[in-house]
Image (cartoon, rainbow, N blue to C red; front, side, top):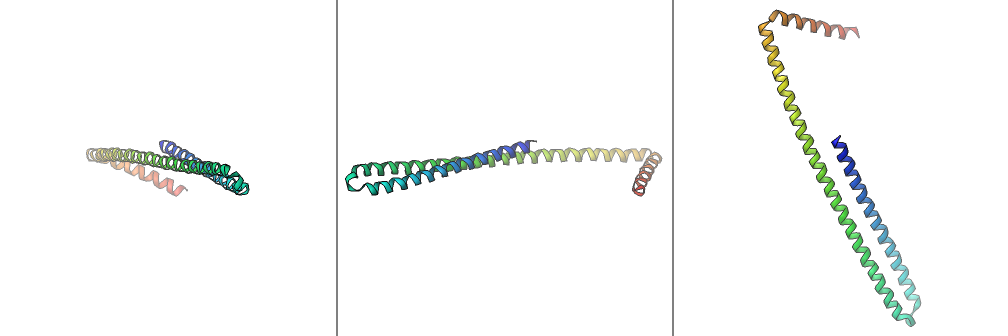
Length: 147
């Protein structure tokens, strides 16, 4: 259940990082398109609008700088999200491994005690143990040949 929650969280973080990167890319594309259009308009205006052209260039440069900054921030956010997801997954994997190891150790100890108990019982009551083993063998043979 916890592994599923970790996977869901990792998927949500990955999706959010992807969405942020996509939006940043879209905004950068739009800013680039706007910069291109502004450059074309400035060329048509000519020398009589030199002041306006300089102002437009400054605005375009500011837009490009802002878009580049936004793209860097989105990229950094995505990198951090992926890093955090990796840390969460590693932690969950370690915990699952630890729990599996404890369960295996417990199972081994219980089976060892059961084997010791059966050995003592067979040594104390050999005839009863032989009858029980025979009944179990007969039951298994009956089930196998019945099919």
